[in-house]
Length: 341
Image (cartoon, rainbow, N blue to C red; front, side, top):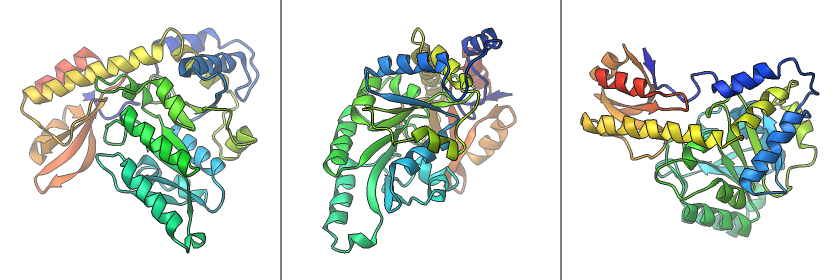
């Protein structure tokens, strides 16, 4: 059985495991105050080219999304995002659980449109009854989106300007950020992300780590007592070394980018394979997530040997499924897949 079910189905890159074993007997202070966390922070700031950035290590993506939104917004403020945005559609109400409303926008292959965003906010502030509504204070995007699509640098610049014009924060969910940055069809760099966003996170869980995300506030703008609130939300780990060591390794010798590039190369081969076999794609993507329309009978047959993710019903006889490559996908996986499709 081979699996393209998701990008976090395998453990961690061997260099991370080796470093965890190598440092296992070291006595280190807790709660991300150890030397490896400090080193990882400096390496991430250098990669972002942001000396004044503040970097925090949280245990997972859901926690990162919830903590960032809830600590940056006041009680009467909400967060704008695409209707299909992860916080709106796949987080079990984690953001709403903290008391902050998600204000959803139309989605276009997973993305929000800058002009529609601007129109929404302008309409809000033109309403004399706005004091009776939830105020928009943050815009949430993910890169890549839930549909594996990417924002162009121009789109990010437009969204960033709108946020500045209306005093809103721009927050990028980077759970799969490495795969977006290494796409064969992107003009966005990590430096661009750091320049255009107020806060974002670098995903580790889906990009080579056992667990963990690095939340980056890009201009010394983290909420006061942020780590205290991280702990209140249960997103802090006592053995902070576990996260620091992993990100220290990922940001040594460009490992994060190299393994992300590998996943993209495997995705390109997977895509070429489905094209060669005459399969229909649900939409065009250039990241590690590829969405295929399968005839239901073929889908059930394929399930016997291949794991993939259900996405949505296409029609009565077809289903959209997702194949995801990762840092751990091998050429052998691709070759084996060819035998079954």
